[in-house]
Image 1 (tube, rainbow, N blue to C red):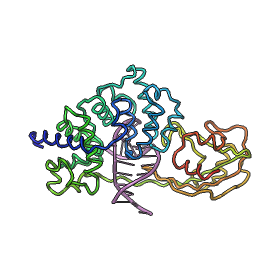
Image 2 (tube, rainbow, N blue to C red):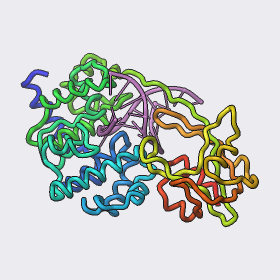
Image 3 (tube, rainbow, N blue to C red):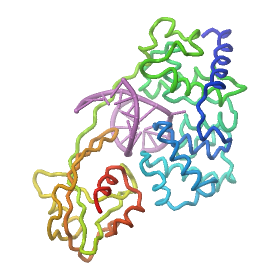
Length: 351
DNA sequence: AAATCGTGGAT
DNA sequence: TATCCAAGATT
């Protein structure tokens, strides 16, 4: 874009934002901690999904100190259903570092803030520009889509190295007087006008400066390579209840998928062995009978894999030594533990 | 660089 | 039903 147009572009964009921006909870604060929480929750997550989580979370943890020393189990319960649970643990680790190393003041420069757990290039720029009015780029999917059209950039936005192209574009265009509004304006424009499909170009405040619109190519951008489809894994899941109504429950490992979340025991279906036998061996219990062999059947789709679950309710007899991270608990107790959505589905069909 | 890491809504 | 995808970060 020619330099004499950049001034009009940023003015029209920010002016549009001032009139049309959405009223969102995190837009009623300038507390860097609260901005931080919102930005982490919003990573790969829709605004409508985040809003109730954000409100509950900040009611529970009003200050950075409240979050820094919260019990991890409680923290994960607050995050339950939001997904990408490492975000919660990284956020707490980052917050704790700010409390202990920076005297509870969130750093106001990219060098320091980028070292915090869970704070990548986008989140760093978002906090710096929105909370501290620093002229820093904050390039997310919206920004890449909008600018790929405005500037007619055809690089594959699925390629990691492409982000730098858009960061440089923002550095050229950004309103240094209102950097937070400018960055949020690009994102709101992407969410409300310059949408992935059927962009509302006739309502766009910057269509005069949009190369793709003026060439009738808005719907052909951005260029994004496709991803592979999910792999399928089949499990037998056991609601294994003892004579006192307590269920076998286990905590997942602290790394990898659904880290530190609790689940009913699940055995990957194997051609060569019975899942019931594996359950008894792995958990050192004895199945004494079936209550419901077809309690529930469903599939749960993650971003990169699909779980096909066949759930059954069985009677079990406890033995002496349970493995680590395995407990027998009542349903009431289990409901206080953080569980992933597929396990909540099973919990919901038990009395 | 490419995989991993959740969930629910839209098309 | 299938696919995409939404304010990404980590490894």
